[in-house]
Each structure stands twice: as C-alpha cells, then as structure tokens.
Image (cartoon, rainbow, N blue to C red):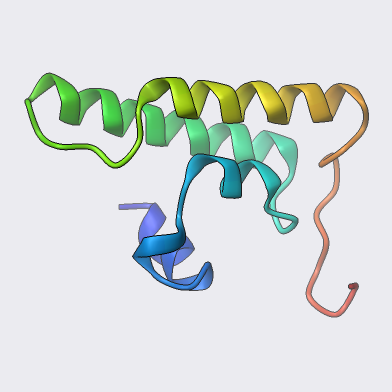
Length: 85
C-alpha cells in the first residue's frame, strides 16, 4: 500500500488521517490530492466489501476541499524540504 511509508514518516499507523495529509508540508497540493483520492478509493472499496474503515469518505472529501481551497490561495504549491524550516 502506498501509505505504508507515509504512515511510518508520520509516526505510525495511529496518526495518519486525511486532514494530516491535507496539512502536511512535505507534499504539494497536487500530491496531497492524489494521495487523498487514492485513500478515498481504498476506503470506498473496503466499504463495498463490508470491511471496517478508519475514515468515512466525507472526511476525505473535506480534506480534499481544504487542499483545493488552500491551493486557490497559493498554499501548498511548493514543498518544504528538510532543513528549510
């Protein structure tokens, strides 16, 4: 799963949620939306199969909307590299 390394970098599996992806400074807005769309597809697939999910699609939609709103204001158009902050 693409989120395995992301989970490790964010402190383990307990801390990964859509809003943290939306506010993560190491990803551009495009990367955040790509990750959130992939997460939404995985969640939707799990729900369709009757598997429990950690997030509702509405949470992911809210995070995507926040990223898009920020991008319109110029937030998240560039990444912050380690050592830059």
